Length: 273
Ligand SMILES: Nc1ncnc2c1ncn2[C@@H]1O[C@H](COP(=O)(O)OP(=O)(O)OP(=O)(O)O)[C@@H](O)[C@H]1O
Image 1 (cartoon, protein in one colour):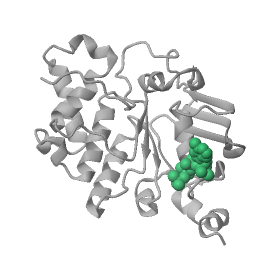
Image 2 (tube, rainbow, N blue to C red):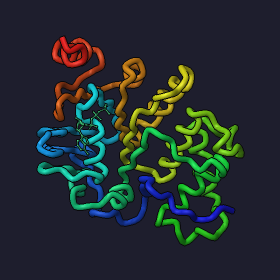
Image 3 (cartoon, protein in one colour):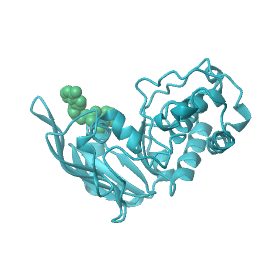
């Protein structure tokens, strides 16, 4: 049995079935997440400039763009870390994310995976997943109880999804960098997020780990909306259906990987030609 240490700084969201912060999620009109005309200034510099972005339910979207394009700021706005000067950010049709704070946004089902893994090294893979489930406020009544069968099953499912079933009793500290990243994705999945924001998931990974991460993220689409910010173009090509290119805080273009890579404006932005 592990203790119920809070996951400080982590953005863990909910499992289904409890009232959501900000109201009930309504995705009947397609986008599960949308930003409209969002601007953010830092000392007069516009990090986001009338950015509009629409993410559909179950979609896997890749966001690319040169350094300083505004990708991180965009994620910060969605998760409530940064408040825009102006603009609209909605989760479904009815939940105004600008009215919620960071924990409430995570609890509503918008979760973020940061670049650096933050698993608990001394705990086993299984215990890390168990802890992620126990930090969900809606299962706090079970904090000191034995895991119920369905909860153990859920951990088993997530272990399969992240490809760590054989490592379930390994200490997380003994995992490779790639395995730690998958475990952290698993910890977020324990909360059954509707939207998963993933920041540079393959940075520092081996080729094989990168391929496995592509399979993992592809397996999530349909069940979750996944927004991936990544610089590795080969990786983006391997998972992308629709790619959004950010530049100077706004959407330069959107389309398939082939479309955006052949767009002269994109080539100019990347090559500075
Ligand atoms: N807190 C801040 N204060 C001042 N300027 C900031 C702040 N955060 C971001 N910026 C600036 O806003 C712009 C957009 O930054 P952001 O980190 O969102 O870009 P990015 O696309 O994520 O870049 P990278 O790919 O390098 O991570 C950059 O010019 C950055 O220097």
